Amino acid sequence: MSEVRQPAPGAGLFRAFWRWHFYASFLVIPVVLILAVTGLIYLFRFQLEPVLHADVMKVEQPAGLVAQPYEAQLGAVRQALPDATVVSMTEPSGPDRSTVFSVSTPAGSRDVFVDPYEGKVLGSLDPDTTLSGAAILLHGELLAGRWGDYVIEIAACWAIVMALTGYYLFFRGRVARARRRAAGAAGAVLRSRHGRTGAVLGAGLLFLIVSGLPWTGFWGAKTQELATQQGTSFWSQDPGALSNPTSTLDESLPHSHTVPWGLGKTEVPRSNPADRTKSIATVDTAVEVGVRNALRRPMTIALPADDEGVFSAIGYAFDDPGKERTLHVDQYGGRVVSTYGYSDYPALAKVVAQGIALHEGRRLGTVNFWLTTVFCLGVVFMSVSGPLMWWRRRPKGKSLGAPRGRLPLRATPALAVLVVALALFLPLFGITLVAALVLDQLLLSRVPKLRTWFNVAR
Image 1 (cartoon, rainbow, N blue to C red):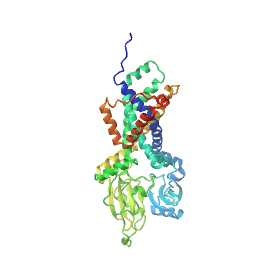
Image 2: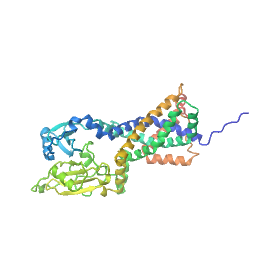
Image 3: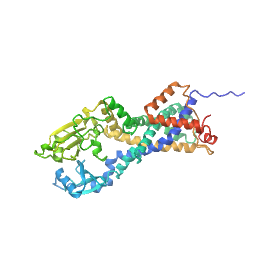
Image 4: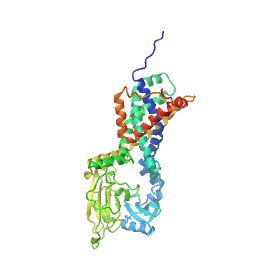
């Protein structure tokens, strides 16, 4: 009489995790693939855009010629576009780059490029239609507004499930994978590479998800509300901001002109029109004040919107959020109305600012840049190798080929606590999880054809 084989300890959990890993991939893979590709484009934006738009972004410095005052360049923009409102000016990032003026027109915002030596307008671009601009919009909301943002947030939540279940599958199944490789089984090498790559990328994926959550329209907005109620914030709250004539910094500038994360929600103070009898400050005044106060360059100068506005000199410390500062300069006399920077941020805003810099691949210089590049390429590989493994092992009959298994929540209280905690911490995950469980119980497990197709355990 043959001996009945007992299932190996943890086998039920292994197959249940495999099933959730499998089904989560249907939502997660398309989204993370888009995020990885658009993230790469954004990461290389400073290399790509000058090549794609060299006619307006690159200039040659004539021998013996120095750059004209920014006020003169501003005049050239206003003369070329008399119906536009100039919102800001960004200094050239190098001697071979143009000055960039952001303008608002009835048709929308545009970036106007000026040769700093000749003082002539080279042309303009819609920041939303450039390669990196489109990548930003796709990366943030899938070009679908609020609902696209929700889809990304849901996919990010389920990506956490994929990462956690993936680690369990990697360590729990390492013996079986080694056995399949030794036997030369079809697909064994790809499966091992998928697992090893995922084991390396998993921690980075979890970090990117967590550091990206403050951007989200649901979790980020709700958590910011809770933080505000506790007297803190994801962003800075500038006590020197006396009023808000031109909107907050991040709303008054298009996305092509980056505002430090922590300063994005600061209000803009006022100038006093009664002081107009004093000397009138200019863009060059604001730049000079920024230089005297050791702001990081190239600076972006937000122009006054009206007689009560100020020049806001933004020192965006690209690779070190700890050095980012903004000075608000009175347009009458050029005195500093207020200054605010990283040292003034709430503790939570400091943490978020550092996380965002790491997320964007700029905090640790070249090391961060190339690690993020390799990570994005690794995500692309995982997004391709996962479906390829399924395609090779898919059944030929009327079945999707999903692993069969149920989470043993009753037998594993710690797992139940983890699932509930994750659902409470990430509400959109909790909502979609409940929806999936209800669908499984009320439809998939009760309709024979669907039960067979989705391989539902009875």
